[in-house]
Length: 178
Length: 324
Image 1 (cartoon, chains in turn cyan, yellow):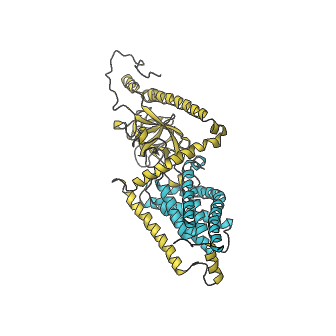
Image 2 (cartoon, rainbow over the protein chains, first blue to last red):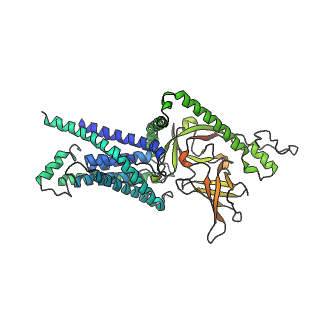
Image 3 (cartoon, rainbow over the protein chains, first blue to last red):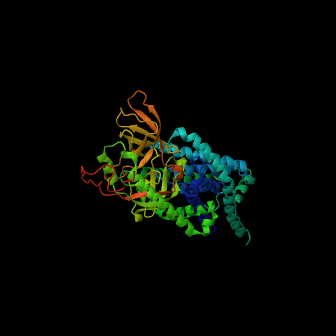
């Protein structure tokens, strides 16, 4: 029951993130680069639930980014990029898992996730001979995106992790009480 | 199955046991399961990519796109109309005002579009007959639409979603323009939304005609955020000049581009290294970051009307649309 609720919450977060990223955040883009809200939510889920959740949430969120208009690239590219970024973020959580994740580690994870996902996205595009991938612009866009993502993460990650933590706490309470 | 993955108690139990090193937090079976999940997800991604990469034969992912668009189209539409109140709180309570203003804006834009189409100086350097022919071209029927989603620069695609789809008569390969000039063409449609490929995308090439010299050429996108375009002339001897304006020369059957829509203005010309001809840099009239209301040309005439030109008709007295 709680597991279902948790999955439902994660799906809700991803859907809201996709909608907001494509239609609201694109209006406050910096030099065309928007905040990767979906990536941030995936990292938040990975940090609170571990690598499997990161990979599956990344796959789902990326797939949504691939098929929701105005996407016009080959489906599966963002899915692959975000799945791997989510998995790696989950591993970071594991490796430093003594207490709550510190803000510096969260920021580093977001930057790492942005780098990894954008690189995988561009690399698959190059492999598929997509003419729109421009490696000359890669560095600039990655820099802006990473900075913007950290700003977004300051707001979003604590929120998502707090809500996911509440759901776990409810389960723990239920298990302990009887 | 996923019920106790990474829960704090499980982790702290392993930590306090003191035997699990930090690198492999978890039992061997959980590590194995974690890797299985990763491998499965990556395989799923590759399957998707391979399935969708063959564009020619109709992708099996298309039903998924349709479904996603039918769910997220209304969501995006709602979300992008909810951003208006952020700019102007009053509008939240005065929806009528907003609609009125939008209506007025559309009307003036429509007028301007008509004027642009009829009185573009595309034909200024032509013989008088051709000039009249151009003015004879009836105005195109437009379906107005709003931009409800914009592709981000990270994905290197320059595409937008508009809130008109097949239900409004919008189909693939229709011209999209706004009051300033050419925006792009429709590449995907669903019931209520359509995806527009902007002319600034690297996948986009538009036939463009130099106003001053009437020379033909091709305008292709550079994939830059500002939408800067490259212009290559077919005729190697023709030289574009800074300040020359470029309009579409149209495609057969008016798809994907109708003729005579202004594209942009030449800002610099560089001779091609080691070859004849030159490449011009074109600044588009449409700022791709500020597209809001656009018109989709849904009802162009089936073919350009070819009325016989009467020698008695004096130049400048075209029966329709004599704007200048």
